[in-house]
Image (tube, rainbow, N blue to C red; front, side, top):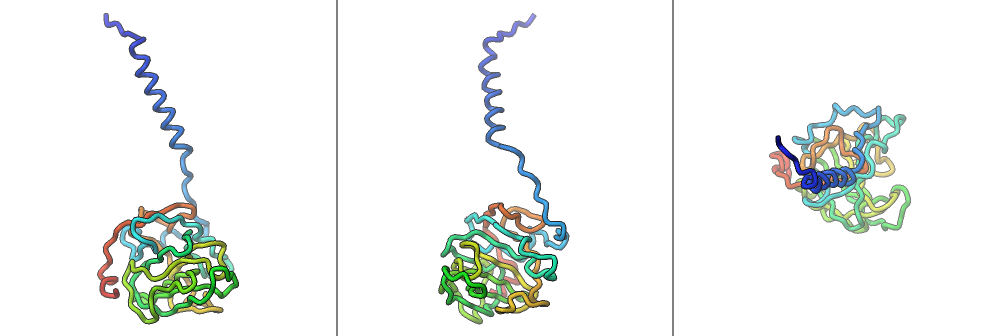
Length: 229
């Protein structure tokens, strides 16, 4: 007959139980699955692994997305549906999500001037005719010149809090064509925004998730972006 020394097994059992309790406490409740608004069709997004876009901040940094599809109102024809807000302290570097040519710059307004249409911005036209808009940059925050060709991932501006802004952040989107300038920021048909996914961060299937923090990973520019840049 085999005899088991119960007293000798108690420390091991106790450590096992304690480890399980600590692990459960640290993991917290399961994060609920994100459900986009019912008017968003996730099928229109490119596979993030092969997307032509990269995140608009430096490789190695983490930034929190604060707003995505809620820019959209069902009554406005889709304007702003795929715009993204990222929380950024004033003066943070903004990088080009795709290569192109600078087609519009505004940088004269103060970060303390929160009047509508007093946003500072840089707009870049891509090879396919779409236009990326980087809005709310700081006073004199443009780091590129009009008609300059920029490479994907190039630093193009410093973020700010100019114009109709709820706090320091970067608002960016890609419009079908343009540039659309104030007061016709979102004039159709050019004002229709494009769905955006990003190949240099964790995989995502329906755009970035508001409230989530993303890390910009190293990337290799596509052949199109190398030619454009």
